Image (tube, rainbow, N blue to C red; front, side):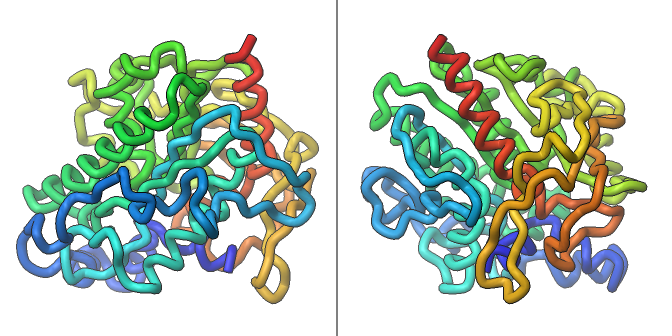
Length: 359
């Protein structure tokens, strides 16, 4: 089950690129018809617990899952706002409804279980359901695609308002992956003033962040050391040799939040093993990679096998990568494992930054 979740996110479309080519991919992935907000149903009411997948007091909260080999325990010191990646792979509409089919629900819960659980030892995780954009919205530069992403973000922003109202003055951790990381960037850009003095760290994982064209508008600096709080971490995991061209060529043609062009040379990379900007670490620094059992029914932590170093804005993996599953994307892209590769280090990193915030 844990392996299954790691296969499902927006860039799963990359498999189709190599099978069918670009034109066929667009035909297969583009949602049918034009964007219609009503197709995804009305906006969710985030005062209702049922519109959250994880939050304090919610039964069956997947963020409370702990892998084999991790110490048990949960703290409510921090408040964690987590935005899940794309789990809606259908093409019948541009945005998924809040309460969708059982398969999408299962995928979403499993993502939260394998990613947001890394923050559960230090805080309560709040993970909203939102009318996520279908993965086809990321393959097009069109009015329909923009409208789909805007609708998804409006839900995220509404959930964030409810989160702020219910967490008082608690220290805040923000986290997201893939589509969730994209919405998190926009949230920081528009709402960073409300986070001053409360932000422990923001984990913008699996989406490129330009140091020159994006970061200055996000309101917080990049994390440069382990004992720094109020800062941003971002990484994208690749094996060696890495080929990110299919993912970054279009990104590099866009302008960032500052109005400057985005350049591949300016991508932010904070190494989750060291917690430092452009850091490098051997495999011995890895406290625990999330590895599935042979029957794929559970997962445990394996330490000391995967190292990593920042190189040209990418996080390049070193060492012996354990059998995580057959879902490495084209170009040696380990995007689906961005959290799993460093699960225990992410837990430790967030705890250290919370301690720095408290000091």
